[in-house]
Image (cartoon, rainbow, N blue to C red):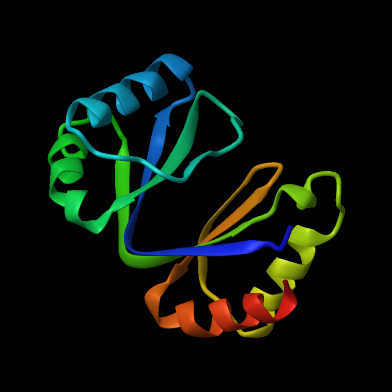
Length: 147
């Protein structure tokens, strides 16, 4: 099977810094977001080093005001950081499972064209890069050339 590249634009990255390193808190965050009818795509929880951590996730730019209304009410020292107008490039291929080096090739392509990568998520058969809109064209072209 040939790898497929799927792209999405108008993506907002939300990072919640200084959240409790507690799965109950993380669960509550995503329950509230689901109640608002907001679709979350990429999710990354930073490795826990203390009682606090950071949580990043992506949403559609159109849902930003809903999320800001929610995150502005979070208590404590939680600091939301927002980056809108991004694009997601996902390489999907069931054949990449147990095939070392696929991520390395994709990351090398992005590095060679100076891509500003905001977030990376992976699974056994998918690698997704969230990139700035200004870097999308060059990153996409470079990745297309390697797969």
